[in-house]
Length: 88
Image (cartoon, rainbow, N blue to C red; front, side):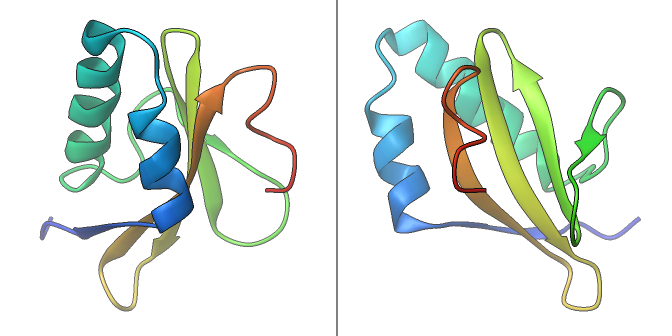
């Protein structure tokens, strides 16, 4: 499988920067980087409407969109599991 290019919305980049601990932030960033190689990893869940998915990383959720025709993974939201689904 060819690698997908990663794109992160500016709002999602700010959400990543706001993650409290550096260890948590590092794990979230590593998880996002792995999405470039495998956009539908084991444990991902398809969200209702469109090609949007989410993966878990600890207490954080990464909501993203897959554009197979363009080989792009677009990270839409990153946040605590309580808040991430609002507005996705």
